[in-house]
Length: 113
Length: 113
Image 1 (cartoon, helix red, strand yellow):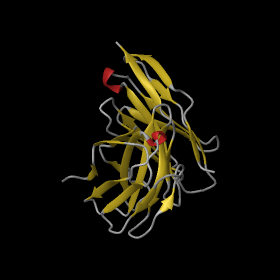
Image 2 (cartoon, rainbow over the protein chains, first blue to last red):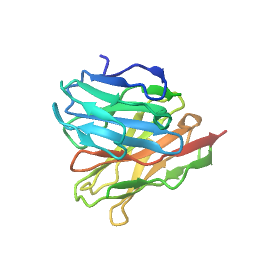
Image 3 (tube, rainbow over the protein chains, first blue to last red):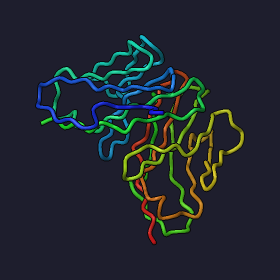
Image 4 (cartoon, rainbow over the protein chains, first blue to last red):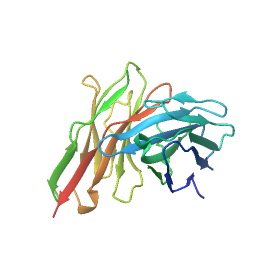
């Protein structure tokens, strides 16, 4: 019963490199979210998805792209990494009913040198 | 625009005292949900309590209660009889009708023995 699994857990990149963060869920949730957490800034929403094949911009979408080709997976891409994207990234899922809390992955710590 | 504001970056409270963590929000939606999460130093996000915009009663969950004042757009978390294990970051979050879920910047709570 894995819940929400993020891959990788840690990564160090050089400026300009690209990478993809994977979020996989086995909860059959429709809604999936990517956040970044920085000291003093809380969790800021990057992109989210309300179902397979859909994506929407959040509060800080610039520099990131996402895809939801399968219901259980939500991918976050950095095409050309910048030091400002150094952060801890959290994926979360949510059920259909508005009173259901989100379920979070363990986070990915990403450093851009 | 949707927004969550937590005005207390940090708080120090004596063990066994009650503590109130402030949260104000802004939304044009009539239907929305408010959540509080706890994030210990280990990093996981723990759901604490939920309040729906149409709920007439303030939500309670054990030692946690929510002081919901809809007209003032505030949803303060009250922790009664604080314990050392309550030391953590606390986040207020809002889910709107478009299922976007945003967070405040958080409050770091320190419980003193």
